[in-house]
Image (cartoon, rainbow, N blue to C red):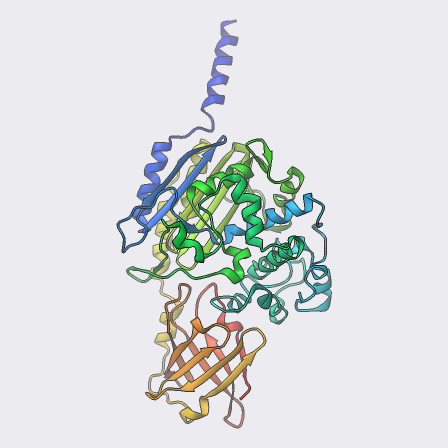
Length: 504
């Protein structure tokens, strides 16, 4: 009898201690990581078993400010917005207003992809899982810092090249989530942002969350974005993302995102109310696009993308994640619903601290061997810097004495492409060129000679994703300029897709 009692006591002890963690130790780990990575400001929320166990700010709103980050400080969550849009469509499915397999063209007749078959067969579901055949980030330059509306951007999608067969690959597409936002507008008669506020912000009490930089001043207590440079970081301005907001426009706080995580961990239930129908929430968290996984890679056996969420397993637990990248800010979210655990990391710079510190928390609650992911990732990041950059390679290969082929006046004119509209090159009085983007004036620049028929791009304003760039004037066999070719090395905004032909 005593043995049975002792065994029951031991089992009870195991059950009550498993899944608990030293939150004070975790807090100290966050603080140290923030300093080690030189993150100006960071906010983190950890939820467990339906409660917020930590929601806190670290550092300051900007390097130019001594105001501390708090649990209510606003940051761009960027692509973590995608889960809100997918959830909005899930609500409409549950209400019988749409079906996941409905064709997009039935709602947006102007929607057109690279071929007629794909255009006719792309479904609402396809928009949300990155399988329509477009390459990762392909076409993003069409919306980036442009003055086009969401609808005008979508009407240009037909010019984006096919990267793989329809539903036979993975290509992360912001353009398809912009399209999803317009589907919401067509079905509800409301902007996607208004529908999200009505469906999620209001019932969850996410009173600090907004969908446009236009509302930052009214809310106050917002972090400033920072661009990492070689040996320092630079404070940069917020960039308005309204025309692609359904793909990445939400701005939120640690406290508000904690509420969002807890609702999702409970599969759409919040304070006893159904925010998202269980079956439709299950659809969101079902893999629609699968990835290959190395054997026992971080304790994972599958990895894929659902609808607005990345999905995998970790030591027998289902995991839902997503990252977000905005001009000068990164975010990362990890949910382990089996453990009723969620971690949200918000930063005001472009450094990859989110995954390592979230993974550290996950391991602590799963009682796994302690591993310093932050240190490992930081060391790897520093090592990559030492290996040099693509820009260094281009500078090394410059032929400073190689003169242009033509007279300067011969390079001027107007150039056009379906994807990127009109770009005009004109001559300044000092002998440099002025480059102007009709659809995106914020991308305007001055051109100075680099070598041969190639000019360096000197942007009029600072851009978070890129700095150095060149543009080559293409010549025909009669030595007449007939096009422009860009080379702006970066991993997000693809100028190499710009195929401008001279029209005047």
